[in-house]
Length: 142
Image (cartoon, rainbow, N blue to C red; front, side, top):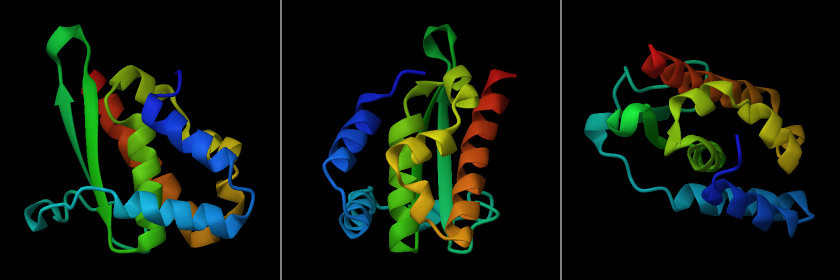
């Protein structure tokens, strides 16, 4: 999968930030820029299992044009995790389900230099979010 422009913009911005604290602040800013999620969407069904903090993901599938295109919305009550949600949305949202299902976001996070600074709990939460998004893409293909 080629990198979607929103994700490429994040990657470009991160490439200018050498210090982990600067990268962390950028992640926080990305999370703060996420549109708010209605309380009605913060349901048990939308909650991501495997995250220590509360994370909710909502997907919509558009089958127009012959292929399933997924868009995602997300939110978290933890500021850093919220930034991770924003990066995943930039990578996956608006893409064909087949590309999402095949794209390992964890590898992209490694390439960006983000994963080595995440603690075990955040790393596990990131994997849970990626699995959820890729699972929804696989479901849209069936």
